[in-house]
Length: 181
Image 1 (spheres, rainbow, N blue to C red):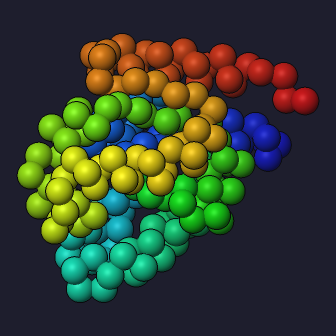
Image 2 (image 1 turned 90 degrees about the vertical axis):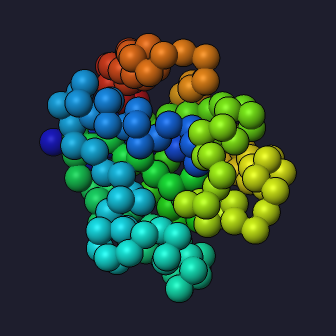
């Protein structure tokens, strides 16, 4: 199988915390018969502690190193849907791997929706000790330029989950058939 054909068998879901990456990733993987790599879950499994504990005990830089390691270890496998961490594209190497290794889908929604979905933010290290809505606005502003590099963007607040998965599946199937030139 050619490198380009392999590349076409990976989908990376990117977007803010609360945008639906894990939930949509699971449904999309099931629909396609692919495996799901939920990067945060893999990190927690390997570390033996929660993401919040990693941030608290080891700091954000340690978490980002683990995130990059999981991506590097799995990005060459095929038939995968990746539910990435919200800040994964801020790392230049991660961004290059993701943009060159498969279809990148930006799951987007408003600050209001994100704020409702993340609840009180106690399990979200980047929201602790901050005004949740203001911090979300700041993170969106910082990350949007990276998210805009995705191949496809979809709004996850207006449509039912099944419709979102169907739209991503349709886009992915069309993307698979694109001329490889």
